[in-house]
Length: 375
Image (cartoon, rainbow, N blue to C red; front, side):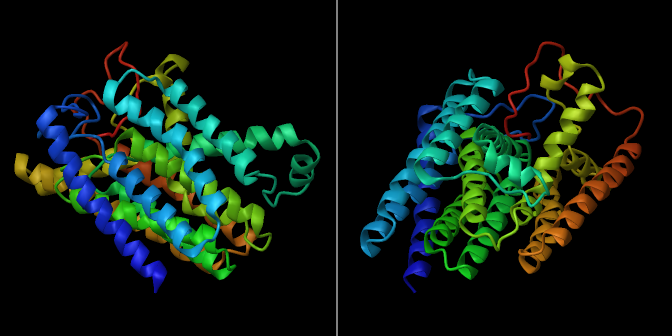
């Protein structure tokens, strides 16, 4: 009952703070997202500060719960300290647009190193023969892998932040799933954190979907992406019965989207890997929806939200079997590989359907890829 009340409080707090953030940003003209670019699909003024109300709602309800229950007080404070660098560098990018991708990745790795030190968040198990033994025997390798996982998943969530409600729904499903398995293994702290984070994200979604009155921004994407990585590592580290491929299947879409995007860009030359384009899976789905609806500008805004609904199915399709087979590594590995294969086949089919006269889908030379919300 207390957990339900706390979750509803986090949701309501996040929703109210999101509205206040929209009003503040509009009044003082801060944190606005551009409406021009190959990855932009909105025409109205929108702040990209959604990470701020999510962070405040999550941190405040976590601290209150720790104080009320007198449980995991140090762990709660330590977790907030761990996510602060990732959140802060994302917020700096949202406000100034001057922190590059490499800087954000390095600072997010700092968050992962804090998780290693303060919470024993060490990725030492992949359920792969010989690899696990090597990770246990050689701590520096496990440390590097932990940093890559923390920064990589945070960046991957940012990559799919493309349409109204898309990344928010994915994050909520992933966090609810992590919380459910944490509940199954009686890990109160991880369960509480995951569900409060999911509730705070849902409060943001009230204003983000379907009309896109505020975007998650880099602060929200890096905050929630890193939090997912940290909770996943802690869940696997604390509970040997949980397969490390359980969280992998939950995040396989954003992770594979990131890896596949790096691969296809590198085929145009290594210098192209840092340039934005509109060739992500969600971008292709959007244009298919737009074409099918033969839209005007108003329907184009509706197509933005409809695109997210189509892609929500991906989150559900990945989460449902993960929740059933969270102990079974062999099944989870098979499903993860199957997703990658299906993704490539669907992607090629959508790309082949693009008309030859389609406008340029890549950014002009010299325009850096800030991996911002792709609208």
